Amino acid sequence: MEINNTKSNALICLAAGDTQSPLIHKAKSLGYIVVVIDKNNKAEGFKYADEKIYISTHDADSIIDQLKLLSKKFKWIGVLNRSSGPPAITAAKICRYFDIPGIPIASAETLVHKDKFRQSCHEKCIPSPDYVIYDASERHNIEVHKFPVVVKPALSIRGKSGITIVRCNEELNNSIRYAVETTINKKIIIEDYLEAPDLTLVSFVNKSKLFPVCFLEELNEENEDGTISPKGFRTFDVNINNWYSQAKDITSNIVSIFKIQRSPLLVSFRPNLDGDLRIVEVHLDLGGQLVIDTLYPAALPFDFLELAVEMATENVNIPDEYDVRPTAIIYNSGGGLIKERGCQIFNADSNQSLDSKILSVKS
Image (cartoon, rainbow, N blue to C red; front, side, top):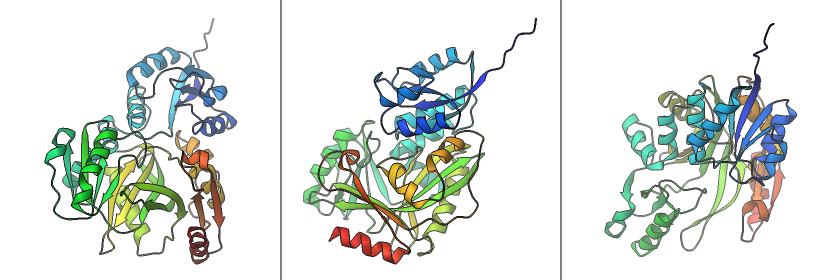
């Protein structure tokens, strides 16, 4: 009697909240089996799951133990992750254990921890702002002699939390206190502040090859206390100052140095006074802040979520050339979470026209 040992291909999705739910739904619509992991057993994304694991996405060892049991019937072909920080390290550990192409664990830990990444930039000659790393215990002995600077946690759960632009010595102590309160690895960074656009190259890596998707400018507002409020994003003109070409070259170098085989890759930059890009941070997730839900569908000639799912597997299907429509997402005013505030979307036929629409909203 012949026994059928064929396993079904399956994707692993880290987290099942409302931001991950569309990603899980997309994977299911494409015919994939999806095993979903989240400590909240009432998370919205579980309604699309084929298998459910109720464990924190930070607990890699426990997750792997559960996935080992399911390995009797599933062959793991990829990991989906839309969460920044520790879940990216969990994804790397899962990929390493089950021999899924991903990113080395040491590389993920370095890229997620801003202090380790800054040190690596210095060692590998990756262009980044000048910086100093401090332990939280040193907070009362920190001195800064040249302003402006950025004070930030070396690792935080939520983007922009703990970050302050400091323009004088009188603002320093409160900014350090804020960074210490939000860091989860007991380290903070003080780095030079570059008065220039916040630029992000959105890309994927598959089979160790970089696939750029689009170039964005993050629209932020500096508050009176130096903290940062996100106001939106816009597609950025790739022809300005050779910045897009620089971003691709630096990001390709990141892929090579950190031996990334397969991963989402968002790399943020600021140019210095000479117009040379300096890398600010790296994210190994798909991003959030309504960009996937609203900006990409309006700007890109293909389904970004479908691409994200296929990039998590061996299926690579992205056009070699395509036009990104000038598009901006502007968050509605008011407090609270961005997803609760909502947003406005603007399309234009040119970047100049888009500039005018953004200015009209700001005024």
